[in-house]
Length: 206
Length: 206
DNA sequence: CCAAAATTTAAACATTTGTTTAATTTTTTA
DNA sequence: TAAAAAATTAAACAAATGTTTAAATTTTGG
Image 1: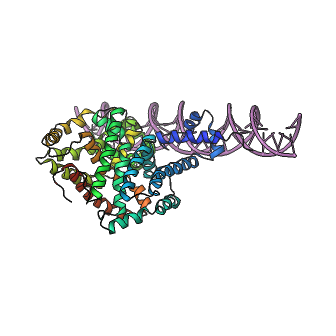
Image 2: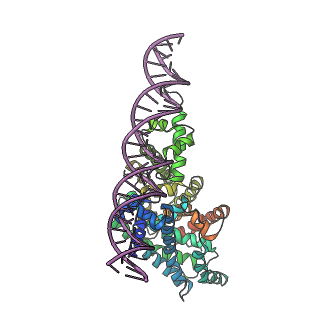
Image 3: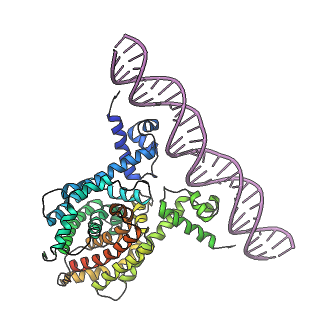
């Protein structure tokens, strides 16, 4: 029955690479087939259609996207430690997958995936108890009175955007990829201090 | 010679609308023609090709994108006032043009515009003297020792990203557009306090 | 080893793509 | 008002698109 399982995986890997860099509309199934070193018929043999293949890749990307969050939140740390670790881990992760934020936001922006975010992506985060830990700290007056949604927006802005803005930033300042990466490292440190300082009012690190 | 100047403008407006929402690859010239209520031949009559039309739209968008910055920086205000005004004005501007950040970053990301950022976009910013004002404040010890590039990254992250993340954020938290916009307003206030607090060390607002 | 199943391929398919052609209509201008 | 110029249209073009078909090859299981 099964022959060489890696064929299906090879196609997925190629599709991921091509979709990530060119987007759903920006590539043809022949681009992907060429990346695999095969034909378009094989893609549809395994995945039925370009759209189905894309949805598979998108779900995987979304899963990766949220995975590092879950790991940190599941740990046995204080809220401050969790936030610091989260920022560290997310930067580490996106250094390895710099196209991911753009791919996710772009796909959602252009409705390339009609499905609303599956609850099985969100539940694991809620199940870590991070939200309760956050509300508890707020009730105790340890942290500022800021909503979880605004806290999330703050974190995502500072962690996702830099990777999405690579081209703009490089052109804007006339710097190359190397300098940009050095700036990224500095940005991470700034963001950590910035957010911790802001959130934990009684704990000025300045 | 000239007949109805508004035809050319009507096409540009339609192209802007379609390109912004669907992206260069995500739309056909027929989509744009339909939006105008005309034919594809007319598009090429005025603009020669889809690519040329896109570049025109992109340049216009980039110009808008930087315009609000220039206005604020040209004013006769203190650095702190300029930063606060910048955040206010940028939010105000992107409330009116929420698709702009995604359009710009996405276009650059996929190399839909080969031309590096024209210097006539950057010079006006440099000419406002904002960079000197910033370095001066740093030398006087009024603000933290942070590079202009990192300061820019901080500002852009917190101002651009929220508008790009609308779909993700709405799905993530299960909120609608109205709640999202309310969160945006709060985010603006947070970012202002956050950044000013961080930058002007001697001026803790907490 | 051999038939059946699974995999891979080349070719064809109907649409859609960006662009061009040539004809028609409208506007200009002299 | 009539010839010239400009604007608009419908139709056609070749190339590229996602998908399917059917044949060929390889793998599997008895």
